[in-house]
Image 1 (cartoon, helix red, strand yellow):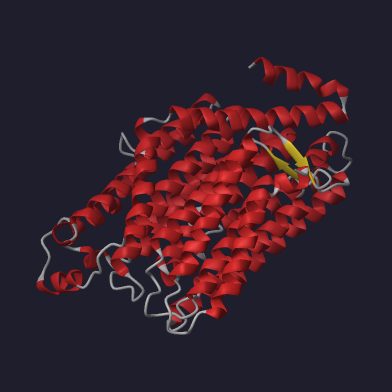
Image 2: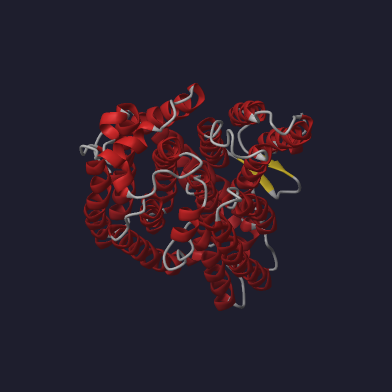
Length: 507
């Protein structure tokens, strides 16, 4: 197989799947269920995951003139993105039943959006990153307004589009300035060019602009203002997707750019990351305390978790990359699981919006209540859940890097988060009133596909909490392979830097 085809095999499969869904959709009568199209998308996603596993045996793959690099790092994020898309598809097969005849477009957009996210994770050329970012963003903009009869959905889509365009402009200006400072937009060439650049301040300004653009995508404070309104108006399964998969892709790009492209400036950008992490954790948790709308509360929660993940950027490269990879996996599992439960409870009509609407869920639907409680406990960071070990890994990496006070701020914020998560959990197990009881009686039975999706998220969250060794080892392997490749590229560009590769090989 051609290296170019092999390198983008998951993306090719998902692209063909999306095209097949779009070609099949007009062939169905308007009143016919679109669930078969969802099953096509599920089959394509499973095939893409299998192809990512197939790529591992080839080690590091370079393709398309060095713009694409498939290694353990990119494969790990391919798994995370593919798993999130799979759970989202399983949980939303019945979401549009009886309400939307354009559901086939939703499945195609999910496939195309995941193509963009996967391209971002394996690109070492900033222009390719931009292409992947746009493919992912455009799909998400459309899906945010997919409930066409709702004004909040249109508002959500427009806000996300306008502010997302702003963020993209910052990212592009950063890429342009990086080219001006180093003469290249390739991440490894930038790292080499920074050693001899005559305009170091221009290069650091470029990095700052890139951080602003990606900070918007990961909902890091102070670039978070869009998040609560967009999450509130978008459909629940779309929120579950956009709060995890695009963030994972953006964090993968951020890890490559900072630790691989700008390692020479780590003493500067780590200070920025320290501030962004502290702001995101504090603003996110304090904002969530004031929310009664569940999706807005989880929007502020996602801002706080972006802060927890940014803590890893202040650690040493090996520890920081591994901790960030592991935390991304745990956050994706528990957050997409929580929104999968919300999708089943609220439905297309968004029957359950506020915390009060969840009153009595434990008595009427004990299975959904138990799953929601489990995911909320993991988001808090209770032991024997993935959230606990994810935070433990990140804070330990920060302490090893000498950032003890940042770890203390993170622990204090974790304590604050207990209040609003447990407030929702308390409502779930409170005795329902007459109105709440009637509303809960209207819930549809859980379909087999939705139950499978919920089970996958729950098993992943539990496994990452009680049996984390395999995931940790893979995260460390991904970190090691990334830094080894950085050493090889520097060795090829400048033999004086070959000692960097040897150091990591010895480790």
